[in-house]
Length: 182
Image (tube, rainbow, N blue to C red):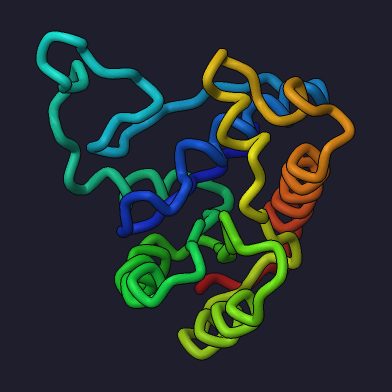
């Protein structure tokens, strides 16, 4: 069994969206899957229409516990100064967990130098950056509206191809025994 944790101290980095898409991608490749959402926001669980709250308590040390249990940690970040500014704290979690990790640049503009600037900033923090970049794609947002993922919404689209590439890269990195920890 291979365990992947998606960790970021910044809300809105795309942890849940990527987790759902990677889960379906793994299942498509014949893997048995299970998604546990321990994010205090609880996006994957849904919210009560009456209270707007998720049906569970906050788990403050959840990111570190998840990281320690993972074979590999994926660190989603967007190309913004606010997201980049929180990556030091996220890196610290990975160092405490002593697990291999890599940043995935998520919701990146289609054409912009900010992707390279973000890559440079992550490298300066001592973080490995995935070769796969997940771009801001309509299919990633619209597919979830009716419970689908990008590969079901637009099978031959760029979003589906990027998720497949990230899945394969993540599996390869997780299987590399010589991988250094952060």
